[in-house]
Image 1 (spheres, rainbow, N blue to C red):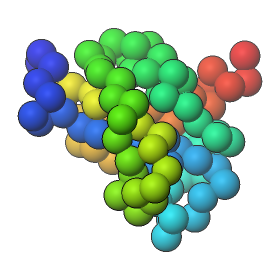
Image 2 (tube, rainbow, N blue to C red; image 1 turned 90 degrees about the vertical axis):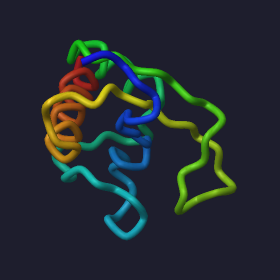
Image 3 (cartoon, rainbow, N blue to C red; image 1 turned 120 degrees about the horizontal axis):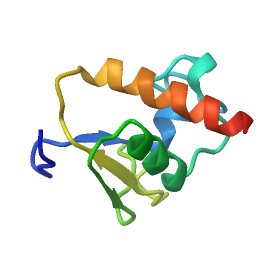
Length: 98
C-alpha cells in the first residue's frame, strides 16, 4: 500500500521509551523498548521493515505538548497498529545491540 499522510499510522518516540510508564505514553512492552528513542532510529526501523514513512519534526506528543520531539508517520498496511508497534520495537532492540 502506498503512503498516504491522511491515513498513516503515527509513531511517537514516547511509545518506545523504556523510561516511561504506560500512563506516561509507553505503548510497547518494556522488552521491546529502548532508552531515549530518536526519530532517526524509528525511521530506520520503518526502513528495515520496508515501510514507507515520513519524519515530522514539528509535532508534539499530545500528553506532553510543550516538548516537541516529533513523530514518524508510517504507511497503513495490512497489520494493526499494535502489531506494527511490536515489529518496530523488535527492530529497535535488535539495532540497539549492534
